[in-house]
Image (cartoon, rainbow, N blue to C red; front, top):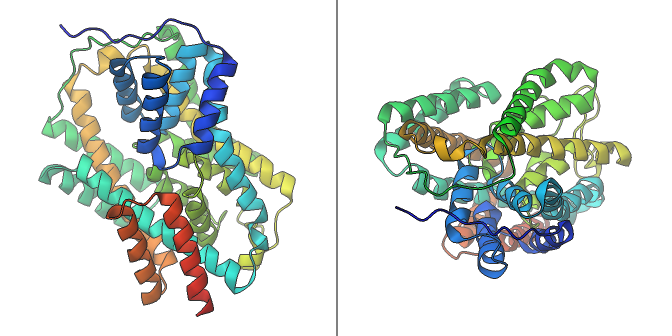
Length: 419
């Protein structure tokens, strides 16, 4: 029989947790997969807060749930080390550096005027083409390894073509899960490696009820103003993100661009900027919340780039904070809800089968987003396409980090604007 997972019972301090995660929040470039590698090196190998088996179980749980996997792992590690205050410290320290940088970009990007500024911003949009293409390629190789799951991904694209927006995405994920269940390819685990965490079954049920109530009630409160509408949209997006990271892109685009809160150019410029900062990609929400305004108002804050009037800075900061909190909250509630029940649930082959199909549908959703809005909004001609292709080759073949490719794309955009 496999030996149970072990987590060190030594209780840490909130200060210790905050310092450890702040270092990662300032240096962890490369997206969620890279973040999980940083976490293992820091907390398994160096600090020895837990062993490899327990860490692997925790990663498996967070990848199974909707939400940002790396941030969920960090939240759980802080919870195990220093209780609920430790969980809050881990989230704040890992998230705030990138959130503040993107909030600053939202508030001051309107100063990027003229050919140089606009060229740099256009380069950020071209970088987004390459980065999303890399994500689609990598996820397709891992999540669609056979023809059945590849077919599920293609069917998801077809469904989104017929029913664009959030409803199409929900339908694609549900259909993918049912298809995976019908295929029955999943294999349960023996459940011998338990994750001892300070969450009771009652606490887990309370978190699940809170998640469901917010999902049902927030849409009823959108008439209360733009901030409540922001909270509803970003909470719903965070509730549906299987795979984390880049998968949030099409969900957020459906929630903020199509209603007219954020322009397509602003959206892609911010997404490109999000690749150049460390920490979780979900902090893109802070940028979107800051630049968003109701459709009937003059939307956006990047006035120098797009000829719009910037919103007041305090409104932008509050909007960014609401969006940031709302997009992370559902993933954390689901994690708390699942922790006490995970060992029993993962024994079921049916659960694994459904997730395989849902993950294949997620690949299709991201592939659809690669075309619309990413490619169609950023590539305006052959020079743009050549720069996007070069960036993709640098990412996929040359293995350059995403922040370096963003800088190259920005400089390339300036060069195209001046040529």
